[in-house]
Every structure is written in structure tokens, then in C-alpha cells.
Image (cartoon, rainbow, N blue to C red):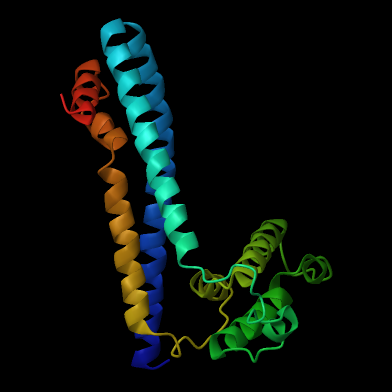
Length: 219
């Protein structure tokens, strides 16, 4: 493996790390949102005046959101010259018959190599694998199948690494991968800037909850 191969592997690992970090924080944000909403409901039930103000605020916010969505829909329709004109739509058969890109060719090759080492039928006929190893490889088989369907090259490479399968990633655009790293980093940062994280970091207190509600209502 030359230096360029190592560079691509490092970039792919960085993309995976940033994506996993974002997915973890996104799941945590979802749990925090549920906790926040439960705490908010309990708090408002003990503060009727604030509950009325909050309800009025939500009604106004919902109306503004509905209006914004309707405006966006009207803008999109205004840009369509003739929505019934389908003459220029590419036939589905032509799409399927298009020549594969270098990335798709490499993914197909890697997927075949992964299947050879992880397919349940292959494992059951090979006595050298322990039950634990079989379970691990079957799990990789399932993941690789999903990644292949989604054309998820980055995660496919991690399955290949697990099985010591060589691959060529040099046709990938490093600058694009670096942008992916920045995108996932920004998404992770946005999770931590949500009101749910703010409330969580402040100790999930009623004082923090009240301050956040007042701030959102502009009080």
C-alpha cells in the first residue's frame, strides 16, 4: 500500500468518525427532546398563566410556519413551465442501462468479495468458523447489503477492512470527502446548540426550563 492509499483510508475513517458522532448526537437529541417535552408539560401544568402564553405563542408560530410552507410551494409551482410535459423525462430502462461509474464498479467487486466471505450458506458449509465468528460475518453481510443498495461507499469500505479485503478508493474526490467531514461536524455542533442540549447541560432544572421558554417567546 502506497502513501496515497493510506491518505484515502485516513480520510474515509475521518468521514466515518464524524458521521457516527453525528448519528450518536442526533439520537441523543431525540431522547433529550422527549425528556424536555415531558418536563415542559409538567412545568406548564403547574404554571397556568405561563401555559396560556406558551399556547398562544405556539399557535402564532404554527400559523407562520404554515404560511411559509404555502409560499414555498407556490414559488416551486411558479418555476414549472408545464407540469404535464413529460416528453423529456428519461425512460427508466435507459437509466438502468447506463454504464456504471468507476465507483459503482469497485463497489460491485467489493460487495461480491464480501458476500464470498460472509454469506450464511458459505459459513454453514465451512467448519473453520466458530459460532461467534459466523454471527459477526453474517452481521457484516447484512450491513454490506444495505450499504450496497444505498451506494454507501464509505461504510462499504469499513466492511471490507473488517474482512481484510483490498479496495481502490483513489478515484474518490478527497476534497468532497473533506467537505463531508465538515458537514457532519456542523450537524453535530447544531445538535449541541439545541434548546434540549442547553436544558440538559444546565442540569435539567425548572429555572433553566423557564428561562428557555421566556427566551423563545422573546420575553
